Length: 408
Ligand code: ADP
Ligand code: ASP
Ligand code: MG
Image (tube, rainbow, N blue to C red; front, side, top):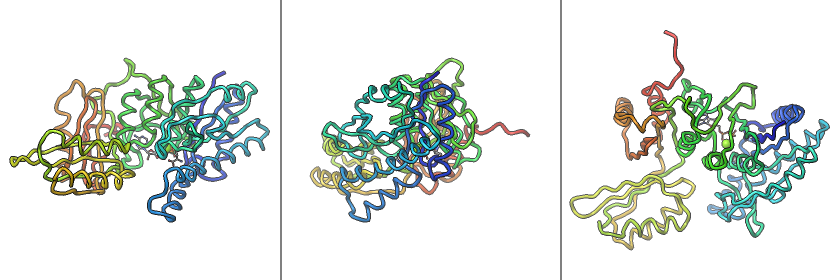
């Protein structure tokens, strides 16, 4: 007997038939003798629909109220699944974050989980109940509803698995597992049997939406094994686990892309100590995460400074930068939303040279211009025009031989 946390994403609970299929799977798992905690996303497209509703009311919705609104999608899906299970004679109960309780900080829209109280859940499990928990939401110290950022149900599930010391956290989604790149962009993408926490962390933080980055951080910290698998078939998916010796340490093991960032350039910044700090302090005070930064120093003692921020924080960041740019005597501020970041990831890069040049050559062969570059021990990222994203992903996937072995 095991304690299993199962998370179902939006596409897995998209309509009544799919919710019935999920109920069937949950019932089978339970009747196999396991304790089951289910974490659900909202029905597919619902969170977007709710965000649109807010934007039709005002350009800048109040962040607290927006979380009250967008957390409702999960309340709908958990009640429907619990209803279905009960109609099948199962003892199930739906739980919202404040009932669990999942405590977060007060950063509306991107709250972090601080603590999950395991006692309520463990008590219910002792009575052999099936728990159906709303993903994506939390509650802050004063009782406000918060949400965890897009894709946050993954993090709810892994954090609950950690709090309950579950045997496994299964992430059910619309693909068969974690692939060498997004299988919906690159038909040659290959499913991985296993991937290390570190590589998955890079893949997720560089844009692979199959798992929210924070869920992988939790999994790594609390050693929660994750099994990413399809909700539409029974095949084994991908295990996200600790790095071990029999893992292939390919030079490049995956390609990721991210279209959710925008680029801001401050032109002709006086090149003296303290200007970068003046520019970035208000941004970090506003809790905006800056990703890539490049600075070009010109002969005239002036520099151009370019950086990227999440599109969701773009307007806020731009407003702050425009104020500071004037204060420090910079010439102006340019903005570009039509960018994307393509990245290659692989632990084997640590000990190989020539990987970057191969990446740049592959992009150049297709006439794709690189606007920014950043590297770390196990990844290389390039910012390009967003219209080339899919082409770049396929070209890089091919250049590093990541596809299925083809019969000749
Ligand atoms: P869910 O609604 O189940 O949470 P998501 O849409 O958040 O599903 O995540 C699954 C999607 O992630 C897939 O449909 C796929 O397009 C995308 N994806 C991006 N990169 C990868 C990858 N390397 N492997 C698998 N899926 C990926
Ligand atoms: N429903 C939320 C979203 O669409 C959370 C999730 O699906 O994980 O982002
Ligand atoms: Mg998701």
